[in-house]
Image (cartoon, rainbow, N blue to C red):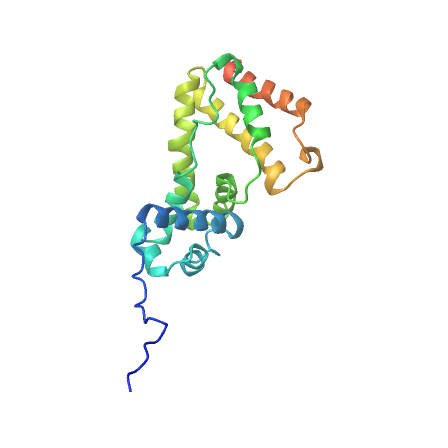
Length: 200
């Protein structure tokens, strides 16, 4: 008696698709930024970052080496002056204020990462050096004399201080939609520093 053929064919399991290296790297950085921003450097473990990225801890090490190197890469991806400095120096205050108040709040903001890093001796100096090299010094060169580095630091303090009380420790004054009066005040302060400070 002839055997009947089964209507179901046995198929071999599909070969695993090769992992896209750039996508994997981006997923690791996205997970790392979120955890560094919300939990801080000390409390964000490599295993936890790997789990959030949907990969193994070995892959995190393969792509970034150490946790310290991963932290550096995480803040390097979104630190710089490009979004802030508009084409017209005379209106850069309005440009920065508009950018600042229109930018949506994010859990993985670089300033959140830096704020957490300030309390961690292991990466505080690293974050400070990177901030100086990527923000303060280029901004000082763009500002020019007098007292360029001091003005650059003051600008960073004004912007990051406003951010602090808008996102990390939100104040009622910054709640809701864009506030034209506050944006105008911030723009005037920034423009005053950009235009130069009187000698003491």
